[in-house]
Length: 81
Image (cartoon, rainbow, N blue to C red; front, top):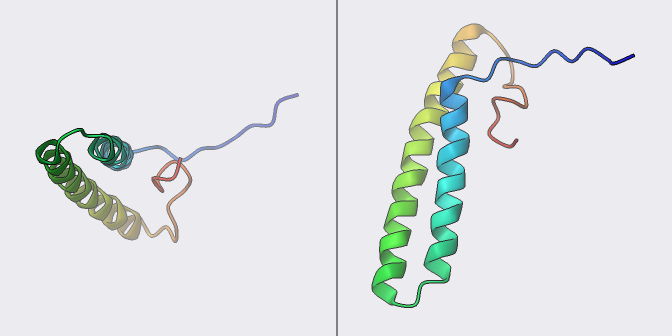
């Protein structure tokens, strides 16, 4: 018999935090392997913008968790999935 798992609902903000984190890592990888310095700098700037976007959505997610009275975000909301 399968155990019933109750997962918290993943919000759009939580998904966007994950997306922008992955995008920043992808751009960092491209910057590290760039052939020309100007390309590496471009990728690094894009990665910084991706991190800034992720921070906006992380703040919104943290405010949502605080407003709902929950102590900690669950695994689905933590951005470490």
